[in-house]
View 1 (cartoon, one colour):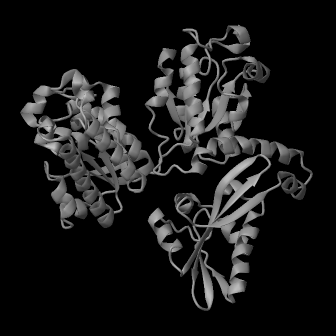
View 2 (tube, helix red, strand yellow):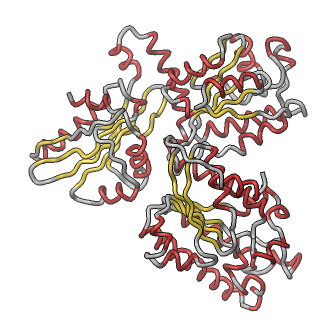
View 3 (cartoon, rainbow, N blue to C red):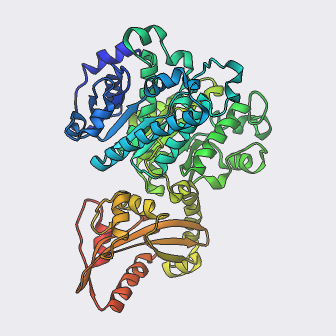
Amino acid sequence: MKLNDYINKSRKLSKHKSMKEIKIAFLSTFTINGLGEIMKVLCHDEKINVQTYVGPYGQYAQEILNTSSKLYSFNPNIIFMLFDAEQFLGDFFHFPYRLSADERKGFIDGKLNEIQDLVKTLSKNTDSKMVLNSLLVPHYSSRGIHENKQEKGLRKLIHYFNETLDKMSVNNSQLFIFDFNSFSSKIGHSNLVDRKMHYLGDLRISPQGLVDISKEYMAYIYPLASMTRKCIVLDLDNTLWGGVVGEDGLENIKLGPEKDGKPFMDFQKRILDMFERGIILAINSKNNYDDVKEVFKKHKYMILKEDKFACIKINWQDKVSNMKEISKELNIGLDSFVFFDDDKTNREMIKELLPEVLVVDMPDDPSLYPKTIEDLHVFNAFTLTKEDMKKGEMYAEQKKREDLKLKSTDIKSFLKELKIKTSITEANKFNTPRISQLTQKTNQFNLTTRRYQEEDIKKFSSSEDYIVKCIDVKDRFGDYGITGAVIVKKSKDFWEIDTFLLSCRILGKEIEFGFMKNILDNAKKAGVEVRAEFIPSKKNKPAENFLK
């Protein structure tokens, strides 16, 4: 669809009770008419109802610095800030070499301070997520082929500006930097800019560019709406390799560095990369297991090995039933799944009968398979901890634990064979993001279900009135990572447990008793009693049973 199509469609949108609600604000140095309407349509397609606020043209600083501005009264969940390099840098953009090298560097440092002050003001006055674009490196220079030889030249300084923005975002959980240069490279600079509209209406991004950037902005909307996906479910024949292994045989499937096999090999590399950033993998295939096992073991170009999959359903059962079983075995909802299958009939069946599952419409041309992964934004989250990046591996290890459990005669022998080790540590700058994440995501074994941001955890852990600890768990099959947290409020006569939680992945292993004993032992040494509050929710029955 084109810009006008989105604008027209936005006028006909209707709100439904089941839709999620978010507020999006836009601040910009240039005209962005239509951007809000595009975002409304894209979000509506994902069952998200959006209210938008577009700040006055070029008045981003006034909106941020004036706490009585409409920006703050609108109270957005997320703020997108679009800065054009030419407008933001002013005459310096056109005539940087009127200044000495040191003066050029000083000018850019001044602009960085300006941005830093604006971000600090926003962070102080709102909990909104902030998305600020990096500056586009100009493709033209009056210095021509000598531009890159200039000491502190314009391009080098803009790269420096962008790198400093990245560093700024590392220490601010609210701030994210949208890589405008990567975006320009993806869609092509000629598609990003419409020179005629540039001069007619100060539209620094073309109408089609606004559509394209809106699609990229959805990467921030999915986690904001708690719609992040966790698991990739894969078909095999003509998806992970070309051909049908049961008919063509191991030697004749298309997989490898040659032209017909390269797209499948690259697709597998993309999937493996997702696994290594924490995405869970599963297989849902109508096939003979022995044929597939031979591919896993003997095909030299099979990138994805069997041990990378947390759940494998290779049988002649319908794929809907398999999908439900995968959900049950992994203990994650169908709304966490993304399904890849070359067969349109299978895709349509899943879409119809399991609408919660995101079904990727695979292209007919396998050379486009890798791009299907590149264009998916549904795996993004606002935090990415060490535990997150190991989640795919952890779920694959869980399969080995389940196999051991089946062989064990009773729960005691099973736990003994696991050889569980725990480590309890106080909150620090390294584990604070994970502790915060656990408070926001843990539902079943959570006494109070209180949600805390990183800043809250830092505040508690630096106070003498609180104890904040986490527990790290490992066993013979691997490292679960930080899977539990406790927050205790201290007073003279007693300690009150504000938060006590454990990830569902380690329930049933009696770890909660040892974790609680640590608190009770410390309280005994301090000569105080311990009180625990239970706040019931729809999901935290296991925590209530523990208290009983």
